[in-house]
Image (cartoon, rainbow over all chains, first blue to last red; front, side, top):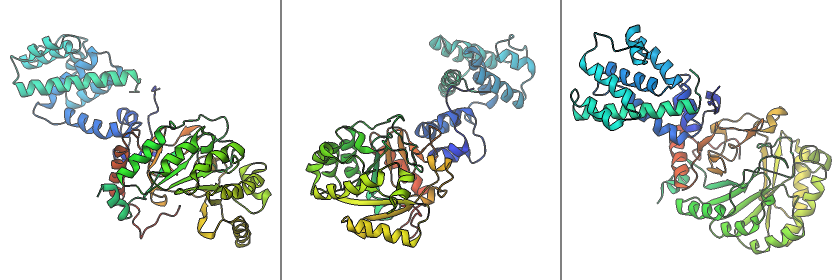
Length: 165
Length: 276
């Protein structure tokens, strides 16, 4: 059970209502809805960072799941394991991103760099960026750091509030 | 011209800004929107914040203020804050009318002659019918208080909340308020809204966004669409009409109000809400 009320559609504040129109908006939105002005800017930001951008979705999902696992965020790790499987990652790949095994042999240099970057991002962020530099341009580095940082924020948010998977 | 001035002029939102001074009350009325009672959490707006909000409201372009609760006059020092508010904008305070004796009446003296009125609740000319909803001896105390307030130079309005009053009963109530010196223009009759304690008693009418007055309402819990918004049921604040948790500066909830009003297409002058 979450540590704060997850607002239902019936209790959704006025500014939050658009996020409930397509059904259950999920526990992150339902928790943020307690402060609608945060929801209003937070969800579009999260949606932009996690959505289609200049970095391929497959590479972004490696970062999201690996950072979440490194931060031991139960909600984010479990939910994004499902997302990864839905995107076509095989069980060995998912296990590697969850920190349960080494990177699959078939992964290329960029994918391996992202796994190392994700592991370092929470406690050695400066070093983490250097792990990316041989493989990504600066706009991609900025995007990947933003993605990883946002994931860290959500890891803390979900863990602190004990959001249900 | 501010965006609020334009929206008020267009009828998109109401000109009155409401403040919930507190949530506690010396009464426990059967239809209370906020489940107010003596022992509930006070959730009081800081007293010095009330005149600040009044000044912000005037700068934003609101045209009047309303203060409600709870019973606002349970807040120590409220009369002084009301005087400061009335210096900014015409101010109406809603009260159950049971506390206007000695010291409080004296505290209200500086408000005489200002753009200020007290709106007292009185639901029937029949003491028993009134007191069934509002508590023992409520009728007697209210009928005693109204002339005292008027003698102090305070404008008094009467609000009647009803589930449907027979014409004869309404006529008797109107005779009573006229006899107390309150003219017809200062008598408001409104339906019970099925929120708060009225839900438990299966009283009143359901109300949607479009039914309620679009009047920005500031509470200790945040800003709401209407004074009928920050209701409490089962001890839990209703959030369906919450706009923002941010209330300072007032421009934040005011902007949110205007966005929702624009989105809802709500409240043109020709499409007045059902509940005032």
